[in-house]
Length: 256
Image (cartoon, rainbow, N blue to C red; front, side, top):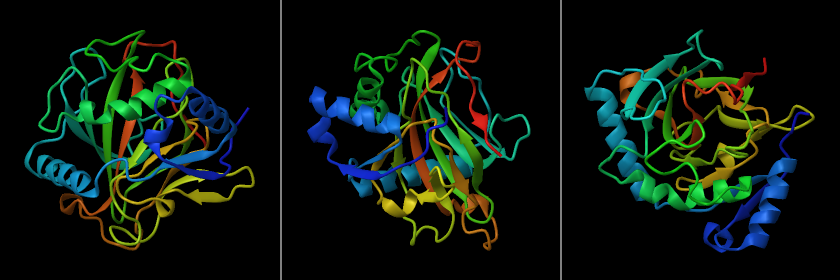
């Protein structure tokens, strides 16, 4: 059965942590399709500092792909509507794993988001975020940059299984300033798109059911695409991904 987007609910993330009844209600509503937005979880100045660092990495080193497996290095890659992808997209991705160190100690900063993600899934709060994969899965911080003029992702749904219900998303750019048109959406049952980016500010974290049809409309489609400027839409996904050899969990499913 397809789950569709319903209402947007704003909340304070600190007020949910360590409150089982609030977590239980959040889980119930997310399973039904509500979209939860935690306001200003991260200071905008910190988000912009990370964004600037990734921009310099992308400008000054070659992109390379590595499969998700134990011990994989942090890496960045480009995906330009690659036919090999389960979901066709155009973005630049920067991946970080908990067994590697980085200058921002990103997984320390991400811990509370992963705690909520795990608790609403019904898992121990620190599941999957250690330095060793568990049950064929591992945490991955996936920064995604969608360039003006070409960045986007086809409508799809992601697998919901024992490892996750929601894939939280940190908003790292401001619609109306960093880009004007397109961006992330979630679809309602009547086909109307919920403009998720327009409902958020830099530093907000969005939680929604990964089965909801969602995607990224082309960012500022009338603008020329300039990858090395890194102007467009930035987000961070707090993911739990199956390892490359894990066949027990389904793949993302394109819906067009």
